[in-house]
Length: 175
Image 1: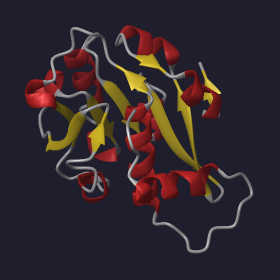
Image 2: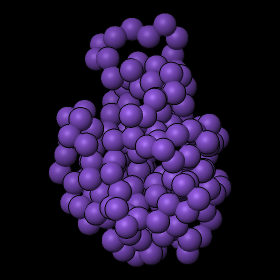
Image 3: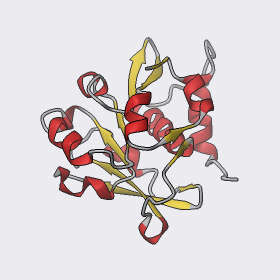
Image 4: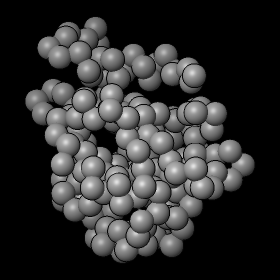
């Protein structure tokens, strides 16, 4: 069983409590990073997925606004693997990623990224509406003062990823 870092768990718990009042507002990017961590926690990769040196590679564009918040996940453990946050400027190395966070910085190159991914077991997460509706497995968005997410189960199956039913129940929508 994996221990969830308490700070990340507190962040996620704060966003999942419907109508709850938080003691202090959590910065949006930190909250989204907590979601990304938990998406990985509730995802199973195919048995044949290579995890070189026991690392779970989280890739993000060097100019992504989320990069600093995602970098806080570096060296956190998920299912016995350390998260390694990698900057990925070109889609060429994307098959070495296990998670890929896409945002507005990736919008122009998203078609090339999708092509490079093919059916590779990469959990794609986006907070860009365009990318979220164009093949990303998880799409984050804001709804009032809350962060919500939608899941494209067809894209997850194409990537041969199994998403926990617990995660699916928390999604705003599952397509």
